[in-house]
Structures are given as structure tokens and as C-alpha cells.
Length: 354
Image (cartoon, helix red, strand yellow):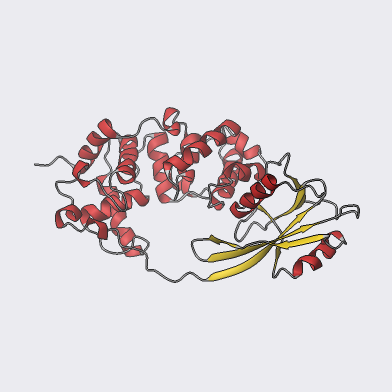
């Protein structure tokens, strides 16, 4: 007779599970919380260096709450899904104001904080507070969907409900923190999306997907749709001092709260925008090759329009939400990913006008 599901998963974890991740060395609620937010839709290897830099700068809730949003977004630049960083920052301020700087230890209170959903709350409650709490991240969904051959896309409410019932059933009363890490590890390292290591899986003997030989069918895929394509132009304005003009985007919408080049509808608008902002025409214009940046819901084709300005004519003064970005001494601000890429290219090419 086979041992219970959780017993087998825990035995596998004891022998093969990951136990040296940075957030496993000091399982304070704050560190677990930050790691779980970073790990949402992001792989462990990608998260590790971001987590370590984040902890070095913001070692506790109070340090994060006291920091300006720009600095938080700066340390998040490149990790993507920036709403996570904004919500983490907002939640830190709520924790200091409403909970005395201590992360709450109930699922309900955790879910009331910005950016924390049911599964993330369960991970925090189990790992940080030792409670019996279930999780259902993408890795766990894949394990359970294959183990029971659960048909359908997990994004559908009916499928999600089935998987949550299974997650609750298998969560043990003891060693819940280890089980939480174990079931995530199993999905991440063995029950992978494209090449599951079924022969080494502790659940191989009664996994319905493996026994039927169709494990790759599960979980069901999200219904495909053709992503629309949008286009824009970035106005990349450079001055004689080796600085580039950036503007902070609104909190809502793409790249919310991040710094970006001004957007224009066409290359021809560059000269007009220059007159509007700096009351001077460019001394040089160059329309560079465009590139595509893809979001989950559409593609964005971006054309950089680089203009050089003669700053002997006084430019518009910097105001909140606008600045001259110094490529030689970059300020610590959050940058949209394509903006960061273009700035690196400009820094490498040199920007001072001859």
C-alpha cells in the first residue's frame, strides 16, 4: 500500500528538496513575504539576485515603508510585473501603520494587504508562522492537475475550485512549512511544463497522468487568442551634458510609476514636442530601427526617435515627474525595461554632442 501523498512528497523533499535558497536561511515573516511576491510568475534563479539586493537595501518592513517609491522600483527594474513592487511598498506602509510593523499572521489579514492573494497568504502563513495553510501556485497546479488528470485551464473558476479542494486535502497537519516548500519544489524541478522527470517523482506510482501516458496534456492550456499589436515612438532627447530626458508615467497603466521617454505618435512629432518642452528645435534627429516589447495582452512596437538639443537655450526646468537622466551617474529610479535597454545603448555609444 502506498504511503499518503504528503508523506511521499516530504520524504522526497528531505532527500532532494532545495534548502539553501536565500529566504530559507532566515525565515522571518518579512523575508518570506518579499520572496513570495518576487516568486509570483518568476523563476527562482531569476529572483535570487533581486532578493539579495532588495534585502541589503530594505532589511525590514520599516526600511521598505520609509523608502521612496522610485528607489523600490529601481531595485525591481528588470524583474517585471511592476505592480508587485508598488503593492509591496503600499503593503509595507500599511503594516507599519496598522499592524505596528509586524506582518499579520492570519490568512484573512494577509489577504487584506495589497498584492497578497490566497496562495501567497498560505505560503507566508505556513512557512513564516508554521500554520496549516494550503497553497496553489502554478507549480502546485501542475502537480495536482497531472496527478488527478484534471481537465481544463486552471484559470477557469470550476477548475480552480477543484484544484483548491485537492490542495486542502493533501496539506498535512504537521511539517506544513516543509510541505509547502516541497510541493513547490516538486513542480519546479521535476513536474516541469515540458519535460517532467516522472521516473524520479515520488508520486509516479499512482499519478493518473503518468499511468495514462498523457501527463503533458495537463493542466489544460489557456485558450489562445491573437495578441493585438500597438505602436508608439519614444522621443529620446539628449543634451550637451550627456543627459537624457525622462518622464514618470502615471501610476495606472503600463509601466505604472516607472520613468520613461516621452511618447509621441510619429517621428514627425519629435520637433513639435521639442518646441513644446524646451522651446528649441533639435539640431539633429535620427529615427532608429524599431523593436517589439511584448506584454501578456498585446505587443508594442517601439520606434526610438533620437534628437540632440543645443542647451544654450534654457530647457524647461525639472519638475516632479520630469528629469534629466545623467548617464554617467545614473539616479536610482525605476525604469521600464525597454527604457533601461535604450539607456544602456546610449551610455555605450556616448551621448555628449561634439
